[in-house]
Length: 452
Image 1 (tube, rainbow, N blue to C red):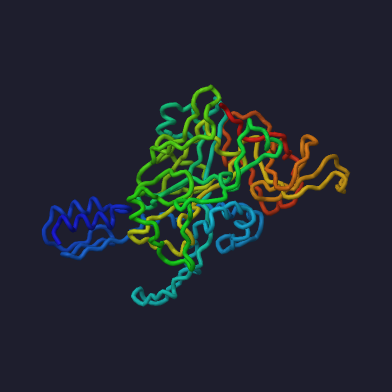
Image 2 (cartoon, rainbow, N blue to C red):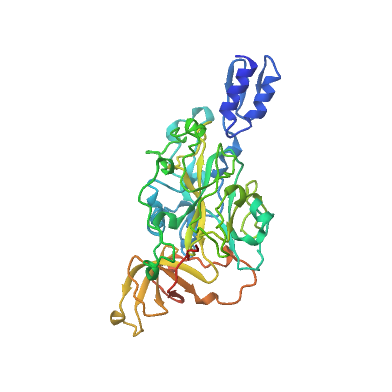
């Protein structure tokens, strides 16, 4: 094998997620040699190998667990807790993407990875599929016109051009590019839809139907049973054909380095000024790498922040919905991904509300005649952030089980002086289940109005 052949092979092995281009250029300049280049790379005559190195596995280095918040006022052992009940009950919208699962991490090496023998004696049975479900907590700020962000940054390309056109952002801690074939944004209501009862038949407002079918390119691939390495299905050949298999709004795609330049259609054809509505475009809306969020609670280094900037013409988020980040790791070169259950997996996310508004799904209705507290009007059990709480309505409009309703947070009616952030957002917890929430009230509203 000559130098050019060696160089091309290195690029095919490492060019997707390592520094294969650097290594291959070095090979072209040398004749016969034996050498190790990056950790895991070896070139010896005609023999060449390339393996992932530490920073290729950044997704296994975890931060605050979004799933833990629900249990914070309990005595649970969070690093060994089975979060499956929360996922199936509070985040059942994930079922629309059949097989999609959150990231699983090794958060306790002592209990999860015990090797008593020497390295050379490790056998497959000593690797155990016992990772803990983990969704790294995302951070967001949403602002009203004229207000400043508490955690400003340089901004995306679009933000730099017209900062007043952007109403907020959602931020995720990620590692180096090239490791993930696709990084994409997941919006809850794009999966389970939303039809606010009072406006179901009103053509002035958008209504989304639940997702019923998936194109092949949007279907997660599932390993059963989970294995140490990701599967090769839909890998390199499909990527070459432009088929980067992953549901959601692609923020990073094309061998894991490229911010797509193709606009996504907006649900609005016009904006509030009468012009053509902005079509979200990753190359304009994604910021790499954003400034540190100093109050996040921990230093995420060596990771950095990806910020997705939200344009004022956008219909994202629907207040109260879950916004997440999906990651699909490259399958070649092989990554030891520790028995992940789906590709992509849900890597990070959070509920997103505004200062005054959220929403929820009505689970059940207690008619006024059946109330035992002597109160006026119906009482509604509503899932807000997936947690069932009891709230009332501002009017006598009749809502039904299955409706998504707009909810006003009357306990936060002070005048805003800065953008509303995740730090100010109330998190629903286990102790809130089936509790009357007097500061939450159903209002006859919906999101979003059509402009044409």
